[in-house]
Length: 179
Image (cartoon, rainbow, N blue to C red; front, side):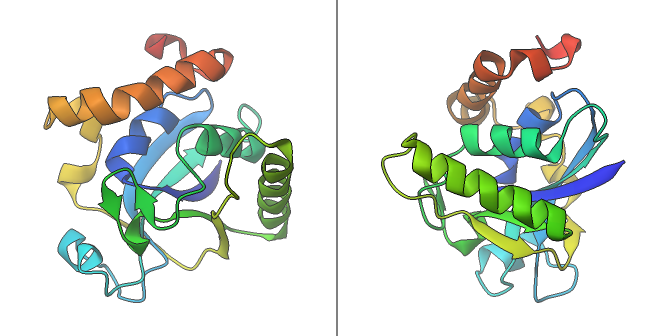
């Protein structure tokens, strides 16, 4: 198993996407590259920790590649908006790939260049490609947010469209129980 750490806005919005992929064993919501050990949600929201709301994805590279994770990552959020995910604003909502090694860095850089050249997005991609330094799991009430039923309105308007994109563009990569 390997781990990928990705930030594509609010972790509530993206956890449900990646846990639906074949080969993904677990997805944890948390805070990546914080300059404060074990930050709380309140600290991260205060914009003083340098942390990004992120996911740590444990996956089997024999079933799903890092490149496929990046394809899903880029397709299910707007990587052209700096420090923003919809109504959520701040560097804690930035789009970022926290690479673990030189291979991941190269794959991420190539994917970003390829998408910029493709013309898929009107604006340039602002996703940061940054070395991984740390990941702290978020509080329990942030885990499995979509399935928890805590905010059905939020899920319906914000998360459901992202899941529909996943099912439309990556249906062959989705676990059977989620189709």
